[in-house]
Image 1 (cartoon, helix red, strand yellow):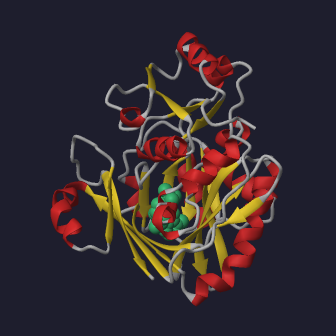
Image 2 (tube, protein in one colour):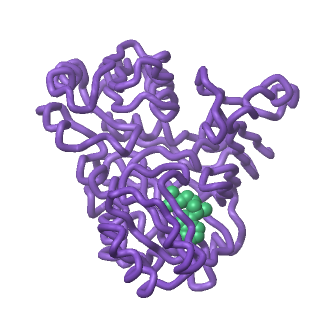
Length: 351
Ligand code: AMP
């Protein structure tokens, strides 16, 4: 067990790191953020900040020596340089990070565990695309295998003729069929160092333009009917990885059951509602898990909980949002407003 008072290292300097650091502080830990960008919104709420690149082995080693445990809030941290962290435990383990960074390895991993992703084909170079379209069919979505987030690095392809006009990067891609889903949902679990697994209620998620717009709990009857299968896959994934911390799997609810979309080895935007809406938040339980503390209860704290992301210039409406006393407003402190940028979120409970 890592006792309160020790320092938790967080790789990545965004809003997930910020909320993890705030949960760590509540439990009496110090947080130390490591991020390449100087204007880290996580560092603002941390006792220590190392601003250095992902390939700076000396800075990583020094950071690790200052931390009792290291976690990550950003799944695109390059893995090989993390060897410089030496003997300091990294939780969740780097095996989860490696798999989740690559859409092909993530789909294979889910398939090996009995999960069903959308029909897919690897596109290692643009010349493979025609064969992938023929094998999978259209319409579909072409995605970069790595570094994509919030709908970035994705191209919708309605017909083979569409594909001809695409200006594709020279990077490995994956093409998958466009899933005809009724709705989307996520399964978020926490697994303790002793293998104790707890699930939060699953949120029904609405994405707009590839970005999460809204999550609501409880989910519809359709999602609840598919939850058993989806949770089994998530639990098998956590066990296979000997996972410690919060793990998220996203699914499409279809007439044929849950279709696996992707896995995030971290706290997740579709779990932000747990801050006010669950007995213990995803952030607190992640800190508890990586420090070897007993896990907190994950039960709902209200009849219904809704979380809406505050995206782009919607953040300018903060006064109006606060004008409704039922709203819990979380702003992440990002200085620059950009279209599609997650600036904060609002949670509402129905008691
Ligand atoms: P991703 O980054 O893969 O999670 O994609 C972001 C969002 O785009 C998803 O949450 C869906 O709303 C949509 N999307 C991604 N892949 C598919 C697919 N194969 N079929 C239908 N919608 C998709």
